[in-house]
Image (tube, rainbow, N blue to C red; front, top):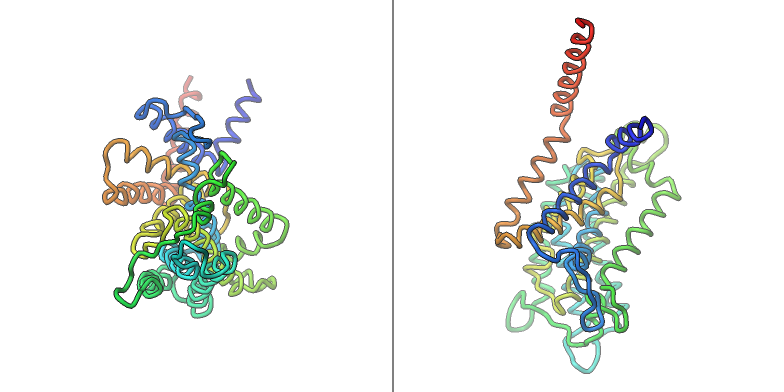
Length: 357
């Protein structure tokens, strides 16, 4: 019994306790709202079910959340341009691939490379503004957030109109955001798993994780021990741009086209919420990638629940914003101090009762 209590006490203090609890709660709510929620079957040679759809649809958000985790941990701020950068990358990829039924205008691997490179370049601009010019992260990324959609629309322009929807006619482009022939698991799930695994290995097998957390806690102290704080923060924004580029690639493949106005729309809020829900502080410092991944899946489960009860797509950000506010409040020093005082008061009261007896 004592061992179980110690195990529970350790789990309760774990950073993953909040995201795991939230995920379980959302799954239970979905199971109540939607009959057969946990049922998984094979239809037309592919896996089908609500759980598979949640994992599939959350793939882009998982990748964005990974980049947002690094940004929040290092710069003590958020990148609100991730959805916009995804649209910019998607626009360039689809433009380079062309809309012919006979073949791609450019080699697909090369087009994807240039699209991801553009995402990295956008991230580098954000990184330069934040790390190089010391501009507050939200203000710096607001510039890209404002200009990005316009850039995507310019890339998507034709001689007749600006910002038109570009289409890819080749069937093979669907494989990235859909299914590879003969494989029953959606391709985005493979991409998200591989992306997270590689990122985790790089951060744990090198000193990068320590650098990011040190800079996020105290940049001046980091410089004193030889860490180039500017380059660490710059790298995190560049990596966030890469994450956005991969997200744009998956999103454009999923819809077989590029809509500059809608790809990545409002995903900034979801990425920030996933990081916060994962137990990571938006004020920088220690981070946990697993928490962000679980948070992203939870957000998608929340979206599924809201759709199930009849909430429209236009109203979704309102409910998610409420969740963000609650999480930020729970993570605030004032709230933690208040909780600590309550526990201390309760302990003193209990001790007084025992003494009186």
